[in-house]
Length: 193
View 1: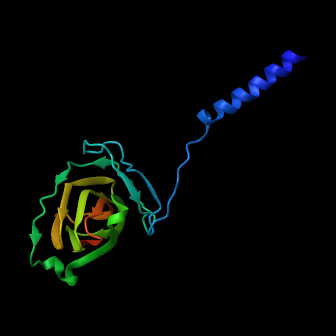
View 2 (view 1 turned 120 degrees about the vertical axis):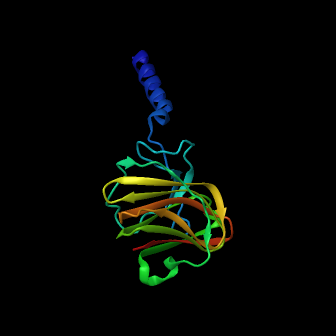
View 3 (view 1 turned 30 degrees about the horizontal axis):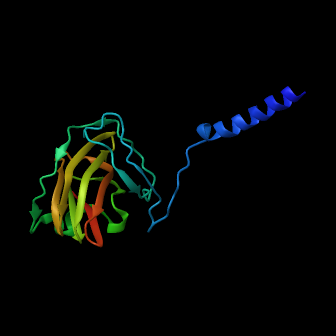
């Protein structure tokens, strides 16, 4: 009888000690200025950039993302020439624009801007502050995706050409990883007809 009790006691103690090894991983979610959680960036098969994925604050998309990347086109290196005066600044040629404000204490942040519009040129604008960007993923309606590599470039206020697609493609959404280098920074994406 003592052996059975001793065996049962050892079995219970052993299970209690082993339980943490089999427990589900806990994720601590901290809500910070609308940011839902901090995690490693999720990229799909065929991701063209070869560097470690960042740990970022992920801001949820404001609408449902309709298209996931199916095929990645060749990546584009961001040139970053500021445009002083452009026709794209004229609201008459814009078919879509969206913006986000990020703060320095968020560090690297992933934002998703829902386009669901057809155009020929995509612009990136730093409206206020300074922004350091890692990359932008432009996902088209057919599942093709183009990654624009900023390579951690820091930019001040200005309007920059992001991507040209002269065939008039429909963009589903644009996802970016960036961080504010000033207390706050506002970035906008604009698409022209």
